[in-house]
Length: 324
Image (cartoon, rainbow, N blue to C red):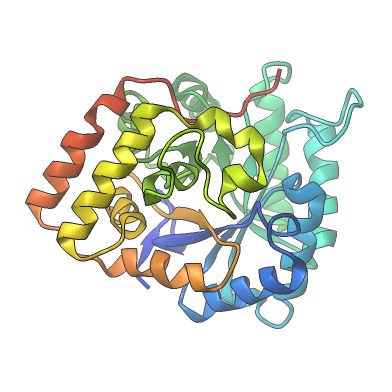
């Protein structure tokens, strides 16, 4: 498995990462542990989770799976989205993120996380407070690197400027929705990250399965698909995206690969992208996803994918998670 630097930091991460929001939900504990072990065996070292995934079950299961194998993983988790209804159960105040880090460490059965990420921008907390708290976490040894998620470009640049001005550890990465079906990060976020040495970690790289070509229409969800198991996901389906999925599938057939592998291979080659996190609900899915890291694409194939997906640079983002 190819490895890359996470942004301008010295941390090396696998080109393909493992997303774990299905663990403890759409994938039971036994299956989730099998997926994690299979990923590590394949050379996938970046494992991404959050304190809210499956109501904290994702972190708990990962903690079990990594017993005896912790040093093989670059473990990333997040805090900031709501954990409850209380006034201090969301956001990126020092109070909230310190409490959430301690709880995450207990569930993950570790005394440090490699990358601690703020899940979304908090308009009610001064960035100075958040960044000083994160800096203290790094200095304590409980966190090695810090990252952002769901930040607008101006929010990320403001944070980086504050860290530079105050001499604090700065964000080395940012997570954002990015795929053939969502190229909006290329307008502002990608140029910023290239300039500032921040690594992009795309989520929804297959647009929730749309880019695998599995959806024939918005009303025809195959058994076991994300829409089938989570009806709320239907809001992401529209005819433009489904049509793109069909086009990518046709091109993949011509190239002798799968649409999923083709979509991931394109994304891995985009500027500023460090690692692409893909979920799996069974170990067999990792084989197809893993093939994307070794897939060679010529200029003609890349140009065709750029052409097919060009309209999605100026449409609405596929997904963004913000505090209401």
